[in-house]
Image 1 (cartoon, rainbow, N blue to C red):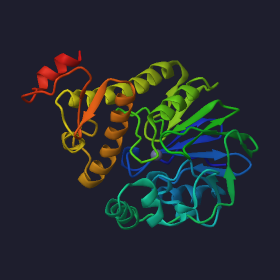
Image 2 (image 1 turned 60 degrees about the horizontal axis):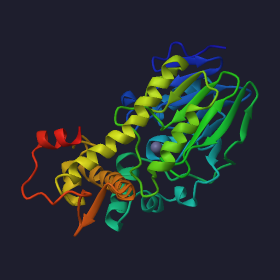
Image 3 (image 1 turned 30 degrees about the vertical axis):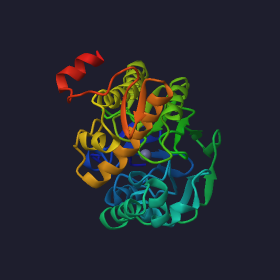
Image 4 (image 1 turned 90 degrees about the horizontal axis):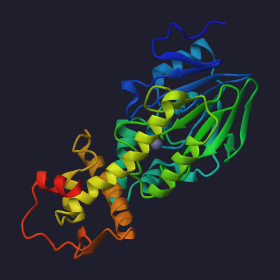
Amino acid sequence: MKGFDDFPYMSPVAEGIWLAKGSGKSRFPFCNGFLMLGDRTVLIDAGIGADRIREIDRRKRIDALIISHPHPDHILSWHVLNDRQLFLPAQTPASVGDLRLLGQRFVEGRQEAQYWTWVASSRLGIHPLRRPDHQFDDGDILDFGAIQLQAIRAPGHLEDHYCFLEKHSGTLFSIDIDFTGFGPWYGNPEGDIRRFRDSVMMLRNLPYRQICSSHKLPIDRPDADEAFDRYLNAFDRQKAAVFDLCRKGMDLTAMVRHSPLYRNRMPDGTLQQIFETQMIRKNLALLVREGRIIEEKGKYRPVGCRPPHRPVSEGESTRLLS
Ligand SMILES: [Zn+2]
């Protein structure tokens, strides 16, 4: 059978497993796909774009689509495979079948949720999902003959975020535990820093030989420890960036405007504000729980620190932190 060597965006990962890179360097709203040739041909996630899915499907008919979690970049072009078998996580709520309800799940506030729904449907062209043919739960083995996929629930990014371990090759699909420079993303109301960290630690201890994530190139086992360290450190870096703003006695609105995590680099300012609010708020809650900051009249400051009488300069706050 002809492989996919002549497809510029496909590269072999292991026997019968191909990485299909997403358009736009696999950055949102795209993500990597993983094609597996077992007794059936299976694709994990639909974020490589409709054209690429069709092109692959013409070369080798895709029998089944597995969705790792229902974020827009992972369900993006699922409708191209509407008539194939659809696998969804057991924990995915029925809201995935209605983009209005999915917006309400992912975004707080009525207008903000409506905006999310508009982006998903009009700008990204996402179709609401149909009911799945199969639902997988934590620990399930999805048996595709030569391909044996163990489903691993890894919450924190989302409640129904799943990773997979292919048992024969030791390929770990870490999905949105993605080792990007931004670090972990927990910008939905249900995102949870502690559970996210636990999920990363759990993945680290699995018997894998290589890691394939949804937004970066594969990582070999010898390089994995460093990648995990860097990714785990990013939790602390994000928290430190929020703590730094507490030293300036800011309230949440001012912090979001300051944009310590996105650094005002997200093209869609509205979505940036929505997601960054969530991520800052979760770090503030963590810092309060750790007894490091207190909130007074909506403003946050380190415990034992008088409210500043003058704005603290950028350089000064960095020195204070180090
Ligand atoms: Zn995601």
